[in-house]
Image (tube, rainbow, N blue to C red; front, side):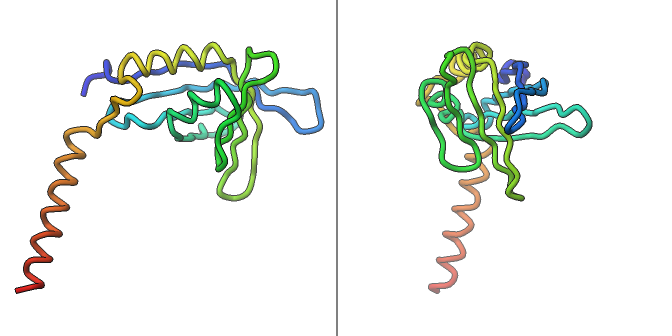
Length: 148
């Protein structure tokens, strides 16, 4: 598939330090791929380390721009100034981080993803549908053999 099916954006993000006014600026790259139409990916570029990748539902991002959303590893909430969105990210190891992102950058990214694949128009790629069809057909064949 061509790169035209992807949407990317760099959005300014700050890592908030609990109990301090200090904020650490981070670069973040947001990506949407129509081959995985229900998800968005974000890479946070840490000052002294490898990028940290998170993947979550595009719908969660949409809801989190308007009101508090999420209950699991990713929770989004518009900040009172409405110019920023707070993101709580919880890792598998129990570590958590609170980030603050520019709302307009996220909204622009989301709008461009909806221009590529409208909400409700998400479909699995042809390759995935073929693979799933083959798996289901194989399971049906095995079930038929077991009954004979």
